[in-house]
Amino acid sequence: MMPKALSQVAVLAALPLAIASTQAQAQSYEMAIATLIPENLTNNSIYPGLVHFKELVESRTDGDVAVTIFGGGQMGSEVETGSQVQAGGRALQSSILTSGAMSSFYPDYQVVTAPFLFDDWRQAWAFFDGEWFADFMSGTVEAADMRYLGTFDDGGGFVAFTNNERLIKTVDDLEGLNIRTEENPAHVATMKALGASATPLPWGELITALETGLADGQFNAPVINTTYGLDEVTDYTTLTGHVYNSASWVVSEAWFQELPEEHQRVITNAAREAVTLSHGASAMLATASWQKSCELFEECYLMPTEERQRMAEIARPAWKTWIVDDFGADAQLVEDMLSEVESLRESLPEEAYQRYGQ
Image (cartoon, rainbow, N blue to C red; front, side):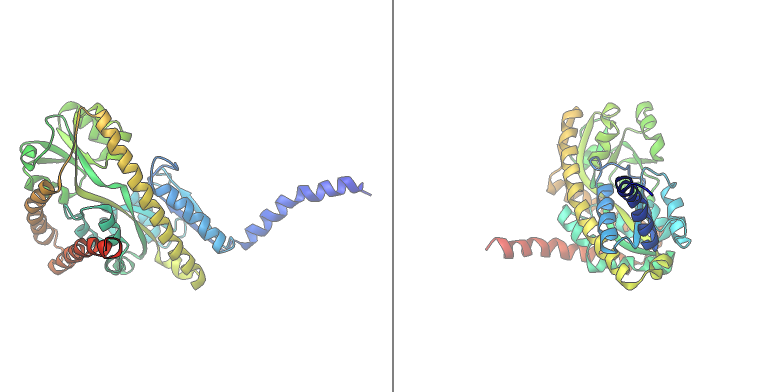
């Protein structure tokens, strides 16, 4: 007979295995999420949001849905992970797709590449988290067998120029500059309209292009500019916010429909909280990175509203011509989107004043 003390030890030792076995039996669904963003809780805003989402979903489903996050591109490129999600979610149920990749699955997403679309974060968040955009993104179900959960800010959303030639203070300062862009024709059209030439290059060729003079400058969110040391290959930076980079969060529609309704409700609600958390972290990191830019670059400049409006008046017509005539987007869809943003531009400040200013 086993001594009583040893018997208690054996029981205690077996408890973790018993608990693990119970949890394994309780888990009915797996949700693997892929992103290029590193698994770091302090240098980006998307991963912390996904971690919070994981905690909410697993606790609110009592472990019935197990969430795993694969950061740092472990599961492949965005197009590769998006294709796995589209294929039915057997190996991968969810992915975070930046605008270029999202457009490859849902071409209408290109309308969101409009230059100078937003004036500030509050306006951008109200748009991406609003009913109009949710209805627009519901088209991903039919177009790509993906269900849209929310939009993260990609690197803080708003972008800043960096270049080696001169400080950009007005649209005239862009004249003759050769700007590296993403391989996105909307960005090329915008640069040409503003008087610059554009050299579309993949991210991996950016530093070499700037070092060799193939490109005079580029634009990215300030957090990207500082994190990747672009101050070492360019001298001047200007925060224009002429592009707002976004990242769409999608799940396999086939997988989502296999879930009980109560789990679908948990996932959609937890995603809203995760996106809200990420918005705040994104703004914080972008603000800190812009301040850091002004320390690292030789000169920095925050473009005032009046000059941004002047640039928008030049860039917007050229972009609209490209998106409708060349890309083939529906003209009414473009106008509806711009109208929705304009409505927010007018209503949000008035709403704030009515609530807090009187």
